[in-house]
Amino acid sequence: MAKIGKQTLGQLLIQSGKIDEHQLKNALREQKISNDYLGNVLIQMGELDEKDRNQSLSHQLKIPYIDLGHYSLDADVIKLVPKRIVREFKVLPLFELQGTLNIAITDPLDDAPINAVREVTGLKIEPIIATSIDLSNAIDLHYGMSNFVSTNSDNDSEQTNMEDLFDEARVVDLVDQIIGQSQKYKASDIHIEPREHDIRVRFRIDGQLQEFQSLPLSIAKPLISRLKIMANMDIAESRKPQDGRILFLSANSRLDLRISTYPTLHGEKSVLRLLNISDAIHSLADLGFEPGPLALYKEMQIGGEGIILVSGPTGSGKTTTLYSTLHNLETTGVNIITIEDPVEYDLENINQAQVNVKSGVTFASALRAILRQDPDIIMVGEVRDEETVELAVRAALTGHLVFSTIHTNDAASGFTRLLNWGIEPFLITSTVKGIIAQRLVRRICKTCKESYEASPVELKKVNLSTEKPITLYRGKGCLSCRNTGFSGRVAIYELLVMDDEIAQLIMDQKPGYLIREKAIEKGMVTLLENGINKAKDGETSLSEIIETLGSTRLI
Image (cartoon, rainbow, N blue to C red):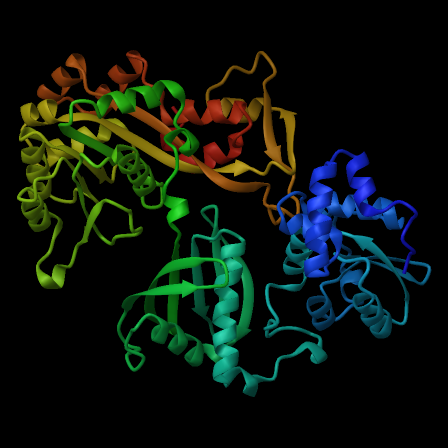
């Protein structure tokens, strides 16, 4: 192990401007109590981040520092260190040169990882410092997400004892591990799918399913039973689909999960939807609203009456838009009531109810009851039929502001859908204030974002001129984004506001494409235009816009 240099870590941190004298004195005082390393104390106090600590340690100890975000491992190097050692000691083999193996570690003062790797490899070991989050992500990426190894592993020493998997404690640990990993990668859903020879575990991250693990098929029944117990479901029933909810508590978080089971050829498939209130409430600007449409959207809410619809396919973020809107409208002087199917997030100070068809609670019946609850603002999770729409119209006509969602491809088609349900045109024009259409597109990863000159082929696909070069952006792929090039999502919107000319087209029962053309003529920014703007700003890629909208919306 390298000897500590003449300068202390505190002196180096002050010289580099990371902390000041006052912060150092407070940290040294706390260090006497905790008896921990100074760098760790500063991190725990919130005065320093791990990257700055490690870079200063690198300078002090003369040990290299590495940013694993852009580092690619060779498959032969990965095989040098067993998975068990990698996870137990939190090390990562980087490269081997002339009998010396360089490994990434987080604590250069801990000899245990170095000794463990030396013992199993017989090589000379040289440490390189990395942050714990980078190291953890790299281990998950190259070695799998857990100690439960794939059934097709070719390393006998790494094989899990199948009998041990039936131990209740092991199954509990496995479930906790899967849920914990899904949180780490900010997954929205967990898919646990029995196949002929194994169980596939997939996470939906930024709208895309990614495979994370393969588990032995023999653990299928104990695994599904554990999930059913957690959700208070019938563990003896395996022939019918079931739904339930799980409250998952970890050391530093509370997570609501909605679980659905479905019998398949090889056993029960389960899908867990992760519900975190922090994911549901955002500022409308953060969601993707640009200043102009955002101002129009807020203007639509003035007056306290009328209907505002949000359209888009399943998974396009409609509920998040409505939740964020209601959160902004919530005050002590306003009574907000919702009816949802199901209630995804528990919103403070908002009265939420859930559809229960078995008990006779439908959107229509609940909406009738809501109107007797002295509401100011009503949210109906979805308008699905003529009866619900008629009640929403009645609510708007009696002085209520009504929000709801509708399944259409664009904003103009929402009016066509209402007409097809038999709603009188004059009722639509007198109650509907506007319709928002939206989609979710993946954000470019900030860590590996790069600019490039768009090709003529790309530009032609979205009807952009090829005469002048246009700079766009894309993600190269790195550790932070699991080599996808994307991290997080942002919405693209089009907002169609009711006015006299749009109202006349509806009164004449004109088709949706004419309503759309008129709205564009009057300045409506389409989904495609909004997407192109975000691509030019570097928020997303043009290829992501093309893939999300499809050929039907590239006009």
